[in-house]
Image (cartoon, rainbow, N blue to C red):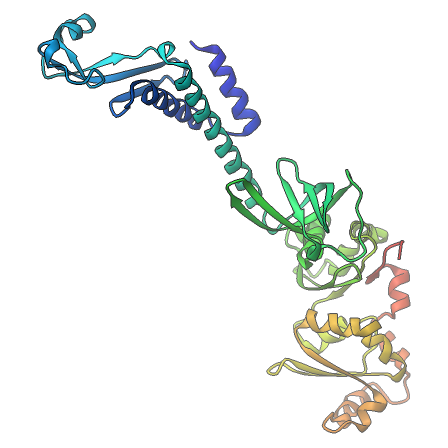
Length: 398
């Protein structure tokens, strides 16, 4: 039994995750290559390796001819007299297996055989790494920052390096070498030099995957993330839905004292996260998406995917958000083109049907204030949501 070879194969299988069968095939091919270099041809060479003991046999299949004079090619033929020295019952016209001693190979043949094995190991190692990370495509992994290459960042993922391109970096984020960060695997390509992995810190799916790993209710399917809209480094809006009426979707994502969402905010370096309830009714969904602003009325057209929204005059700037961010994210979250107007603007806007809004509003009673109306409907203001830790979360380093 070849114990040294067996131990070497065990180590390669464990460390490189290359199957023994693949390694055995590589050894067989290397011996065939060595024979070809030594004899000039290897068409009749056969190699057999015992998978249990690692003992191997290399032999040439040769045709038996009557006399030595009839031998035209020593590699392919053998005289009857020589054949009977190996097999006493050999007959002319038969084929016999003549053992080849690997120790007789020259230095060049031995080096070529070694290179064949090493090349196969490298190919299999690249294939194993590619398959391993290809399975993680569209998922989040933890990596260690190595160095900046121009404006791009090289990140070590364990067995392979990934590239965080400038276009996939959050503006303003700076990393130090050896710093551990979480990234979203965008794409894994197989190249002759090994797998090329592109990762992202700006993709909306990064936030979604972080919630899936942090919130058990999302992982087991009790709570679903129905939609997500993100402006990386600034704010993310998340619409969630509970499949269990006894489970509060927003509360599950927030966690006790905001523990769950704060862990994600910290990973995203203080990016604000708004968590709202998903609703099949477009009007309710748009109202939720525009939080923390209070909404007076929503007119949604499901066919045109447009919506007109009326807000109190003093809430217009909050509904639109800084540089239009709140309205922009709400539009992405809902898939509707949203037109926001204050009550004063709505009265003067042609085709806005302000009288319809007044009819709906009258049901609540004209004498009630906006604050009273929204207290009754269960909506919280931006300040209330932030203080209670239920919907809007910001990083400590804002």
